[in-house]
Length: 255
Length: 277
Image (cartoon, rainbow over all chains, first blue to last red):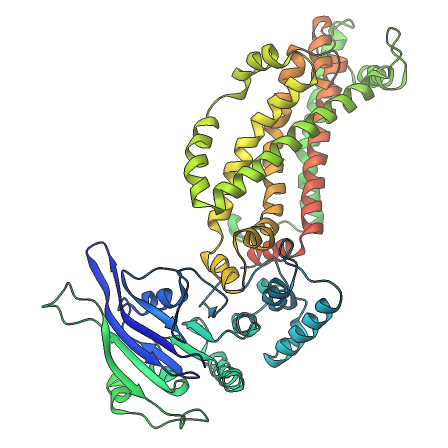
């Protein structure tokens, strides 16, 4: 229902070609991970998907419709940091999108029955990400892992067809990261969202994705060329529950 | 012996050390005053504390023979009214302009350079123009204070908004906010405590402009009074008035700080987190 399509997506900054004609089709409900060396253009790719920047050429389609050129509610986002509003409590952060969707256009708030419904929905989400105890705390009073749980709950509250994750667990310690992986799989499994996750953690990319893309720039003889998809691996769902066998590529990375 | 950089005072010692400079000032004045008065009982330069007390009782609790007012209190109320109106007006326009310039790139292009230039105009140099165009009444004094603090507050808020992580602005849009709701629900609530902080920082300047305006053209007010009695070398009135102005300024600052922490618990939590290592 929400397939993502990239058509010869190209981004040029001044003289530098960052992305060079990326073509991609993602089936609905796919969990696509994107890896690549730093500076290879994976963040730029995500910014284009998000609408934070517009492509030099090509376009992004969701279910055959071009996405607006600025951030919109079709796309949820979790950044590595600063994803949540620091002046709102956990509960208020989760309610934010729902209040804007259902509420008064001028005040961005809900009253009466709508308000009660939103409170109930937010409570479910907060419990789903394990923050029930912290519902009245402010983000600055949460650990890094809890902040990212909150960011996830906030992003999926509107059930966006496309969820974008920009190295969401990059700043977390390994233990926290592992429990976030479990949570993310649960949340994704329950919704059928299409997910695009940029990461530089290769085992995370293998462990979470149903499909993995490797972005890379051509070797130095062609300095002007931008990044392309050099590997496109279908991982299937065999990894969704539990560990996976290391692949040759992964072994090469750790060698 | 620990190094000086590692020596921290305990609670009672810290309190004691706080009192020391005030006590030193008090005792120095007392001694100097006693010496001068011993030489010449008519000396007006360093009046005794008892003389100052008498003067304040006369100003605060006895009706003025000419006007029937209690001058100390009319002066205080008049000055505080001017200050509140001026700072309030300046803060309001500062907030509006700061929000527009901080959040909207198009408005920033219009406002930011002109604000930078405008902020360089010394407000006191504008005072004659204000007197000529607006008259010598309240309006020109209020406008002087507003012009004096407004551009500073606007520029401060613009800078604060640009410090907001761009992630928050993008996030708001992915949650369905347009320009107005981003402003109303994300930027403005985060700027209110910053506005109060900016007002606190600009209060010193506001008092300066108030007293300057009152000294030049006024018929009442704290600044007017001290410049008036200067003609009679009435240090017994000037010194308590200066102390009173200082106390009022300090109380305003303290009150605003407490108000900020009480109204915006998220801001208090953030300050708290920043203080921890």
